[in-house]
Length: 446
Image (cartoon, rainbow, N blue to C red):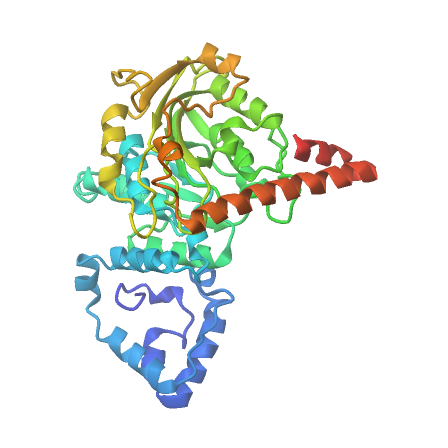
């Protein structure tokens, strides 16, 4: 890629594509192994980030030779025109769908990403952040949306085009292998903004600039390694990773900024700090819409999830007047390999949501028999800030039909067991009476 785009000055002398192509047999294989080590420690920072700690499983020189020869014959510009970046995304999606692959934990289904982006409507000139960037799905879909509405950026000035390429999209990814896939994915789509390797729930995230748009699907589970986030700006300490990410997101928006975030059900009803965080969210932001997603749409987890849509207010009090809920879960197909999720499944919700990204379109409550309902802030307050609201009768519970696939049921059981284990561990620490961990443990139990 560097050779074809005349950017191989990013690479150290003697370790470029032409050097690899010129060699043969075992010499080429040994050089390739040395090249990976060299690119992981030298060259531009982006090159080092892509190649750091990389290894090869190739052991036969003839296979490497075939790969190198095939790639060398590729017409780079034609390949880009025909959608090389999209091909790379398809490979990531295929990899994520493999049960033996770990990539599923980083991959959000593309129909869901596209729905969220279409409704939030990122614009040219805005800062778009993903604090749990994975392989870059939300950032690339946002870039694709903006390019579609600006004639592939040709409607913009040269300075505006430069901003879109180098500054508009940013965030953090925790896992190194996902981060290298993310950087390559962005390069193939013509995006060279900075998405760093780090922990959003540490000071890394605290230093991110305020965003106009945040689109994200934070990882499920407790904080890696246990314990609380090491953020000094969180009012409500919690070991619940999603609640911590939610605090980062609504605090990280500019006044008037908007967000769409995928979160599991427990964020909607968890008591203690969960209740405090939801109240703070509804004070600081207009939480105008919640989409209850169907089960089985994620490759690696069977947890029940939702999308929260909200806009940061000009003030920090009383911004949420009412929340609209769309139930896309009850009496829907059991999604999975047999019934894959596609963009058509989101059309009724998109129609109900309307054209305004901040939920200001005309909306009509469909009543107890419909999927689209409105609940006032006062009604939610009476529920103890619980926004895990359902009203439709689940027909599958009566008939026994439409049950989730066995792996989804098993994943839900494992999620509940993990939560119980975390609570038991916190309780044991509290009973031991260690003064250094007592405050943290009480927060864990909340």
